[in-house]
Length: 365
View (cartoon, rainbow, N blue to C red):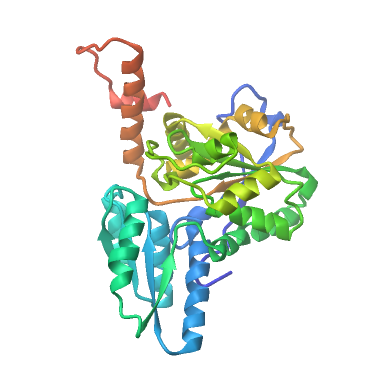
């Protein structure tokens, strides 16, 4: 355990909404609850590790003071701000205009300085480097630049998640040979790289497949694998803003090709339905970026298709519930209503007399 992140529970979870399968034939699902991190997401592991280690090096030199500069669409910036609050370090976070006001206020509440610039993360990152970090007094300040996902120290921090998973499964007497997959959401690939690094350390990377899940509209990981080269999207259309990066890291692409990582794309509306269903089943709110992975636990046919095998009651699957603080329950209810209405409008002629009742619609999820 570290001062900047928590050891989180790995709990056996039953998904009553699973269709077309008897409950006694379902595999055992374990969820890793990263929503219990200090920042509410797995980002605390990697970003906290980066900030802590670099700050220690700067303090050891003793000539300058460390100051943190991060760019983020939301969760990564909040993780940086929370880590800095714990370590008593000054922190500046640049977020794009698309970042929700709720997230901006949460970052500010840690005492961090928040700057809003750019339409999306890449523009915010450029502003941070060119207009903020270029103006600091480097005779007094040693800057710590925090990328949301592309840094070896970030991957190292995220790899601790595998150590905890293996410890808990050992306590539960689950053999590594029974673990048929680890499911995680993929944005830029920081979490994924950490999982691969952790599996390498435990000498399980060739034995336990990883299934990377993305939402349609930001499926750059899937597209890169299909084309056999790294690609960059010009525009992100998915509502899963925590996955909304236009490109993946070079290490993510390298790992995916090397270890034959499976890739799954799910639709925004389907993921939001899963998020709302999960809230209804377990009284916990999960944002779409996290719900994308949980969606495969509710829809085993998609998971089995990705793994290329039929899962049995003796099999174990680990789902990384990566957490996140970007969405409220109301956000998701309103977004789902809009998405389903758009789908209906696309299939039928406009009907000015048709009204959708929100309560009736959501009751049927």
